[in-house]
Amino acid sequence: MPTNRRHVIATAVALSASTLVPLSAFAQKKIVLGFSQVGAESEWRTANTESIKSAAKDAGIELKFSDAQQKQENQIKAIRAFIAQKVDVIAFSPVVESGWDNVLKEAKAAKIPVVLTDRSVNSKDSSLYVTFMGSDFVEEGRKAGRWLVEKTKGQKGDVRIVELQGTVGSAPAIDRKKGFEEIIKADPKFKIVRSQTGDFTRAKGKEVMEAFLKAEGKNGINVLYAHNDDMAIGAIQAIEEAGLKPAKDITIISIDGVKGAFEAMMAGKLNVSVECSPLLGPQLMTAVKDILAGKQVPKRIVTEESIFPMETAAAEFPKRKY
Ligand code: GZL
Image 1 (cartoon, helix red, strand yellow):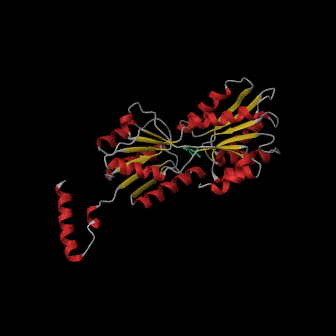
Image 2 (cartoon, protein in one colour):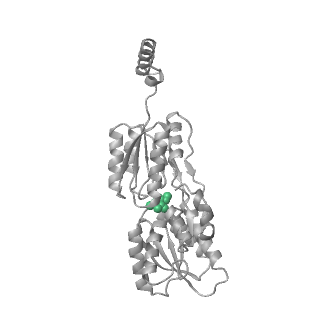
Image 3 (spheres, rainbow, N blue to C red):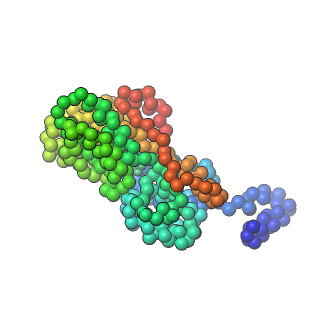
């Protein structure tokens, strides 16, 4: 046992004999976790932040939390600050996949373990992080595609799709597109006629959907595939303002399964939402403690998820935790 810890224990024993202070008050150094969050761009992100903050509190872990406002340079700055503060572990949700090797090498040189949550990085050096915990975004895109194939079975003629992509360069945007296209490419009737980023926000989702409607005309769009519920909810406003019925004139498929999506499905304005759970806080705190205890942690921890069509929304809604 390192000398300073022995000294602390000895002092603690002496003190506790005379002042009856519990030994644990001295012996346990509080774990310090530095967390760099993407931002506060969506209901999903808000629920994710809440999960991390409450889980840190429950776990007795000191959380240094930073909101990057969806800017990579702010996340890199925050990670460097955590290194300077000598935190015990660094965790973050990378806003985009690339550009992390240098700062992760600095964390490695400082012997501070790094955990990726929610989104991953495309670094070739997987020794730069201990584990990546989060959803399988390709599978989420496949689930969206399979739902559409089922919904349009036997339907003749083209199915004209517009796509609201997530943040350019982010793992969920790249992989949700990949998974969806992998499924629909089997049938040439499916045509993605427009595809543009709405940056995962309601405001941008509405703005881009307005442009899609203007370009394609009122009868030019059969399906909207949105990479998250917030963009779908913004697009629903644009569809209604164009005098069309969302989920009827235009079938709407989205991902996350946040409260706003369930409310839209129960109002008959959204057809389906693929679940993407933000509740990663408890898993993260367990991984942090296991890493510091020297335990083996899997390189990849995948979140188990479902799919919620509007027909099940009312029954599911009371059970939802985010
Ligand atoms: C997915 C997460 C995405 C959500 C969006 O795990 O990274 O970012 O789907 C959020 O709502 O903005």
